[in-house]
Length: 329
Ligand code: UDP
Ligand code: MG
Image (cartoon, rainbow, N blue to C red; front, side, top):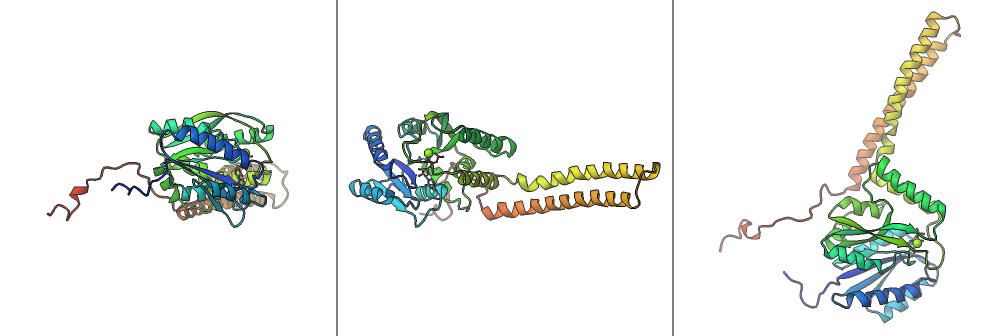
């Protein structure tokens, strides 16, 4: 059934997490408006959702002022700082657009790139992520750690994740609705988006420097984030103990053989040494193996608790008229 005329969803929603960005907000407002008027006045409507993630500077006041003058700006204020990923989630929960774009507030994700994303979306893609072809003004450490992080996630842990892409991405409404149904607590959004599937593609862009202010991701938050990413999508670390156990089991056999040889065929042993060596090697590997098995079960419990859907349907033919009871006049 078509929606009544009065309830018209916007074509494009922009979701921007904001944490202490008072220095950026005025410029952000200008850039957003010039971009949105240029692209979408041709047809289609838009909304911008700012999620204030418990800012303690002038950001909340600035955002409220902007929203008072622009009906298509919506502001959500968190009661305290819940973190970037929570802010994105809140934005996606509220976004009503046919296409929804998540972007950083510091203009490192240039609004103009959204045009390219929209083009891909019109071609029929459901997810268009921004891949950073160059990163300006980010320290060697940040670039290096990011490069390593994505590659370890993909290669060693088998997580399907686009390399060198952040949270800057466009998603179609079906993808957004699917993401809303994933309520796991440790949220690694870019991983979840990759996980849901649908037709995904990328656009490349040069990532400029932060417009003003400091990064809101100090080292401890970055480490926490990386850890969340790994543990939300891989139970490989839990199974590590099984492998260590298996290898130390082989080691135990070798050490045991050697200890027996020394005991039986030489006279270099101290009383009790052989027994000690054998027991030590055997019990270590047995413990490791058992921890590995425990890890496997814990991993399964964890998977169950996350309660992700077993499958996600992108499209389906529905033969409405053939439902029982409806064939009767
Ligand atoms: N941010 C947030 N909550 C936080 C940390 C960051 O909402 O706890 C927002 C921040 O305002 C920005 C985006 O997340 O819009 C990305 O943060 P930032 O630019 O500082 O990260 P970086 O680009 O340095 O990785
Ligand atoms: Mg930034």
